[in-house]
Length: 351
Image (cartoon, rainbow, N blue to C red; front, side):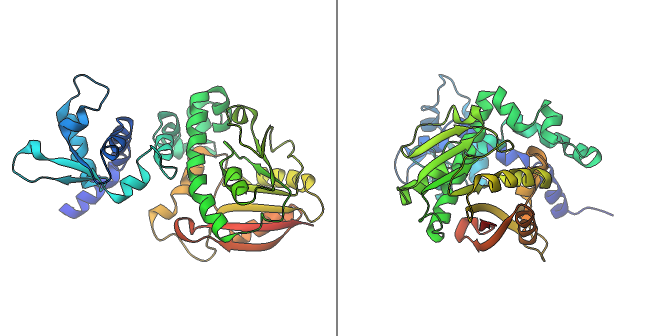
């Protein structure tokens, strides 16, 4: 059966779907979005003007031009030309590029997430996805001989890339959480398990400064965590024990682990909390009765296969069962507006 041109284009787009990410990464590493942004709010620059800001005495202008043209077609840059002279072509930033790909003075930038997902160490596990099916194995461990968390302990640069990425997502997520959830207001102490750089707690304490926050993560993570007023950094393993507090908070942590591991972690939470102590979980929750309608709805779930330890996105019913098995009663489950509409806040009480 003959393939028409549209079908061939679709097939090639799928096969070459890695290209946009890696070309955008090259532009980020060249600092091009920030170069354009630094020229003014609605600036547009020529290839020569951009090249003059690069850390090279003789950059290849033809390569640079082709990268800029491609990313203009992908909606990252805006390409304009007021004459037939090729040297008159200029490049500005789209609104989405200003929001997501400019790094300077932009806490909502997604650059750290891009640099994590496009990092060679983090891309290598995807080449072992088929082995996960055949051998029920850990893709990251297949690629590197150890899981992601152990690898981060031994490789500080990778540890920093991962933590910077998670911190970026937390900035965006906490804005949504605090806009609609007020369950932190009556707490005296709060532990953020897997809190990384303390970003989530910093946002919570800004809204509720009376809380004493405990940022709990692996020792090699908290060793590089900045000091933040009101937050105590504590190193340890959630598989051993969790610091005592009025409430325990998880954001996108339990998604990384299989059911057996989650039960062990939640069991330690139960031991650490007082009677009627509160467990607050922010996670992506899948709809029980519907199948994904588009590939982007499954991306995070597939990332869990590539990078995590048997983790996955779970349904509301699966969460209720896990929490009940661990000695918790769910008292609230609420969705978030806007960018994080797939995420829900689960509030449970120790029983």
